[in-house]
Image 1 (cartoon, one colour):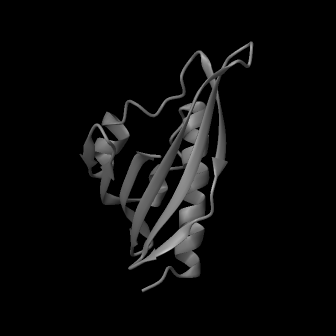
Image 2 (image 1 turned 45 degrees about the vertical axis):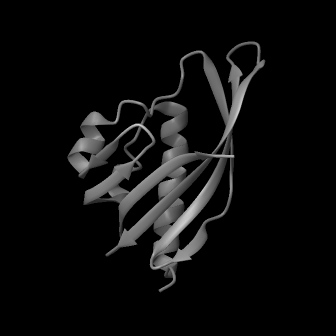
Length: 125
């Protein structure tokens, strides 16, 4: 089954919240998009449940000495109420603007009953 318009709106709101959180460390826009039993998968750790995400997600704050730029792709419908978006991040040294590093990421989500039930992020390329 393909994503419905409301699910695409949720995915877009979630993506915008993630970008805001990566820039500011403020995750308040992300949490309302998540199901109580969300599975949050990263290369280093998997969190289960909104409580773990809210209390144990410690690696989502912006680096103090780096500024970030993002190039976000559009959501790609993967079928079965799943979607993916590609993200290109560029990190620059605060103050000088000198290039530090860049990376490509892929975020995949699954939606059920108007909430995100699974989030997975991984490096690509």
